[in-house]
Image 1 (cartoon, rainbow, N blue to C red):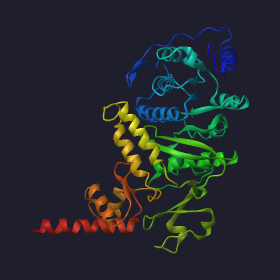
Image 2 (image 1 turned 180 degrees about the vertical axis):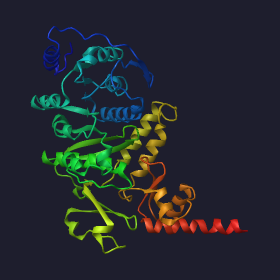
Image 3 (image 1 turned 45 degrees about the vertical axis):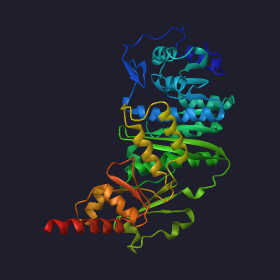
Image 4 (image 1 turned 90 degrees about the vertical axis):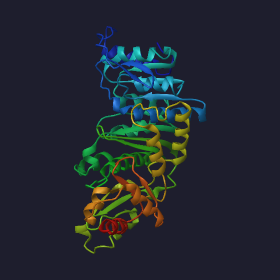
Length: 416
């Protein structure tokens, strides 16, 4: 058995589920390979498409270890154990607790972790994640990194995960609740995250901001604040993943927990603080009730930390991960995220289809639009969330005007 501090917990947990202490029958093996590691997924739930999210988590974990000199990881819902395996093998974690509530996964997890490390560096538990996190807090057994790759909203794990992570440590959280982020279940988003969300054209970015906002709220109750190091959206699921650093004390940027308005009439978005709630309006209309949709409170600050992402890219290059063709192009993703980190960029993004619809025009290439916006002094970047969208501080009305100006020379040349 492991010599880690959770040893008494793992023994009692396993025997309570399986009183005779026998391992469950071996599942049929199904082998996969990720970043050079062969592992068995058995009958566990496994998504190959989530490899990019695992890449991002491992890079951040390795940077944390390089900075602090230690790394203890709790993988709260480990599935087949591939995340735990990679934290051990690539981030060189000192210890990993791999937990999955399903005891039938035990033999698969044990086999995978044994392939990369002796059991002195890891242990396997089979508890509901909330109970495990709560018991870690009670025993003052804190972790440098807690990875909660949950289904649904994931909000029920935020408080207990914040309790069990070290101050200064990392919390890697998940939501797959695309219906709430799309504004289709405002009462559910209100119950889960304390945010009333209405349908907005950049709903997948809202999903990330809703998740961060929920963590901001829970952290403030405990006297902490959280800082997003990166926010990642993936279409499969959909999956919203955010890496937060947990810090003591009140947030110096509390203005970023506020409200977002979107004007159906002109397509403009704005952020409003709590003390501006009575002043919400749009310059294009005096009929606020008909033209504006307001969602919140949500995180309205930067989705990423550019310095952290730059360090991630440097490490990925050192490891030979950039441009290797495995999964999503990691280099392209990190570059997009770094561009999105520009503090001048507001919430949301402008979808190409909406620009074309509002301007009643055929769009030139997005690169041409971005160049024109930049020349007029606007901040602009592509969005890692939507390939046909741009992030910019240019209002929709001005963006349509600029695109129309771009088309005029093209139309004149076609007449000749």
